[in-house]
Image 1 (cartoon, helix red, strand yellow):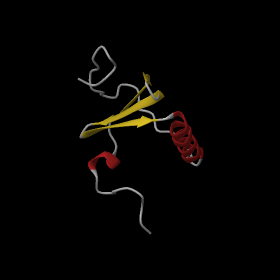
Image 2: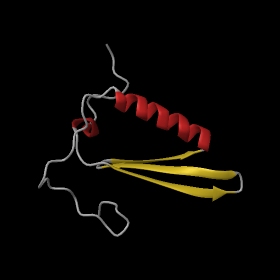
Image 3: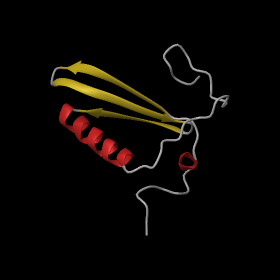
Length: 88
């Protein structure tokens, strides 16, 4: 069976990730700016409200299938953040 992601990609093995969101008003209406940062890359998506709602539903439905959410243990070494809450 194949997976919908690259199992050999370094980011799949775990590590810190940061998700930031912001709403920007444009001449065509508000859009959601969603940025996902991982140690080896950054992805930014610009979504209309309907598309953002679709992503939220997919994300929520997928999380609902999980048995638990992994949380970094107390004392885990995380990279320092800058004033904007992003890794330095």
